[in-house]
Image (cartoon, rainbow, N blue to C red):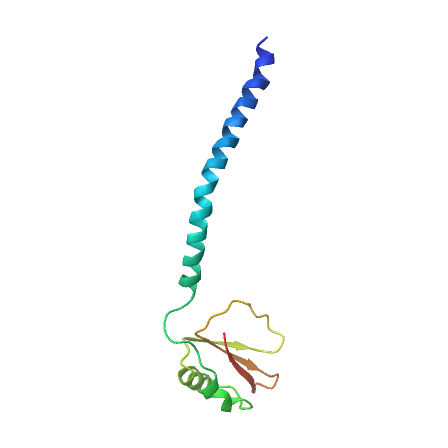
Length: 114
């Protein structure tokens, strides 16, 4: 007789858990929406954005640390990333970063923000 009651008790327990999950899932969805705005603003660094226009005259020059520091200063960037041929590049966007793209011989082929 008790064996017949076990499936009924399990079914009642699962039903109680399922209905509890539905009512609890609504608040996290709204909090998830509000928290999704916060990480976007947290990942965007504060301060003025990079401006690659003033450093376009460096295209074609051989890269060196002094050229990189000069480009960083003149573009008003917060950071710099060197990209060599064949190097893997991540796709995250950073408005304060200057990307310096190099050719195989070490000369600068492009300067872009992001």
